[in-house]
Length: 339
Image (cartoon, rainbow, N blue to C red; front, side, top):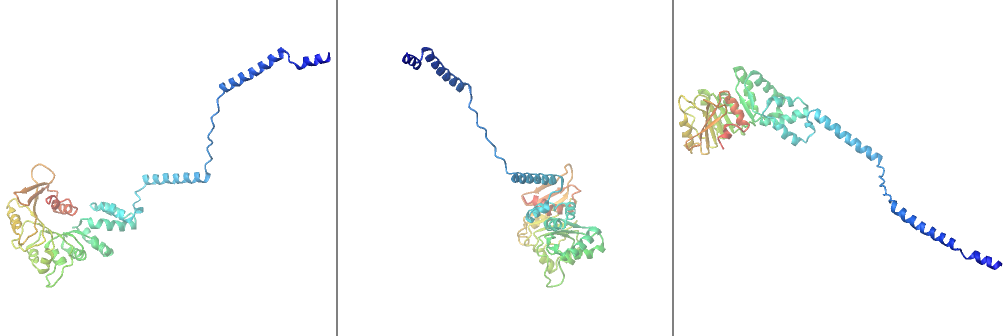
């Protein structure tokens, strides 16, 4: 009896057997459903915390850059901070405007020194009235180190009392390249009647003789005057006449100019010197200047025949002084008629 009872306990009944199977199947289905319904979470990238000191330094640099940009937009161009070579190139473009140069020299001592060095060689300096002649004379007395930078001078004092100052200026400016004076000033400041005198203005290549009297013309035949004229490559005569005596050889002359006389046609003089290869072996261009008539406000250039003889006509307001300035700046009849 005991043995039968024990055997019945150890051998599972059919009901218990099916319960175990159901539990197994349910667990499999549950696992399958869970795997289908759930999504694997995407790993989150953890951004490392930036270096606090480096971030502060970068922010400070950016703020300083923005502050500097604001100063540049509001304030003047920091030309004094540029290298001297670049500054000289920039300032050199201001040489044609004397008012701009006058403002630049007031900025600072450094900008003033750079402005003089960059602009004076290209400036067309005109000394006519009392204030111009005497103030420039005082300027050279106080700043004699700037004498080598004076390259272009137009000197025509309106009154006799200003001649001594004008002569002092011309004697000092021995590095001049382009000169516009009358015969008297040329005689008393550049050349000399004394035998054996050696000229000092050895760099001058362009000369404009302004309304020279008969006495002034006579002074051009001195040995020192001839020595000076031999080095001239561009000669312009401003006045109502050209003396017959002006026929001495000028071996280096390339361009010659004088005033057109409509009442007494003087084209023949230009034609004659163009043909004179002994006295003017290098002469290439002759330009006659006159007032433009008829319509039109600009310059009119007429080439005569097959020669290098030109008539350059401009409005009445384009004076000889303004034409000289244009030639000095490289945009006058010397350049236009040489093309």
